Image (cartoon, rainbow, N blue to C red; front, top):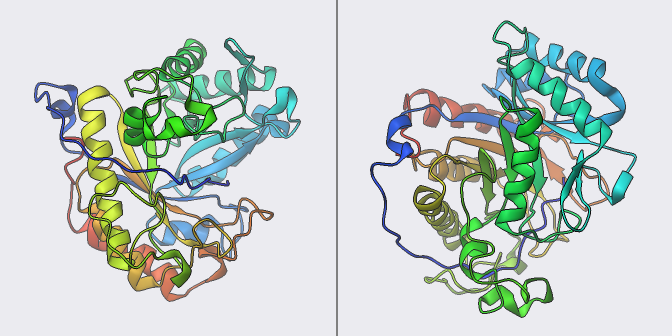
Length: 368
């Protein structure tokens, strides 16, 4: 999956919090701990046998439309054998209607492809039946990738349009959770309109001030990220104390980690105020892309642990993913990732982060 790093401007506010919200009713949960993309789950060397040994309990995995329900169930069986849960991302390789999702925007409304209908009905049969053997394995389905940006065909979309898709998915699969990778929702909420900073881009010039205001009914799990590990060329040499400049760039390694904390704090406050039923997920960097904008390097195992500490001890996320285990996009310029380092200190860092910040700390307070 190519996560287009937004060269956006970051902004921070301190909204009022409604302490009678739904957050306080689910104050204590243990965040899920995951990786993204296990190319061959049955592989002894670097499949689920290896992943599960590192205490990973969640995987974001591709489910190809061509596999249909029998193939999807067979894949879940492998995950069930390792007691690892799955967020299933349906990929329609036919590219019908100009996209690879199971649903598409026709210019005025969302529509489901036939494979999308089959996928949602299959997921609902599992999620709605506590006696189904895969009931506890299928955690959620993937909704869209960066729909407030231009990654999803037809985007950027307004919050009302995303709520329309969420309602459409729930109409077929009311018991199925939806996961979306939204990026910095706080920036889109405040700056994604003609008078905001993003209004300088043609895609946002027609948006009113409240068009991208975040709200419940978009997704059940909202993923955000900031990738802090850059090559030397990626550092600007100054600390951005306001976090309003340079987009995905930052001043120095310490400043980059401060940007991670800033992003989590801002988006946590946003969902507490505007979307209390939504849970926040953070994506942790475990890749190199030296040709990216900015250029990214593979973090050291020690840096991975430092990043995990910043995120997991915040008490503000319902789950994390290491991005990524296997390379989901061979043509995208990635040069390093976790599965390339079998049995190494990289794998040990994934395991140690769980042991230190998830297990030993017990039940973390999330969304409270």
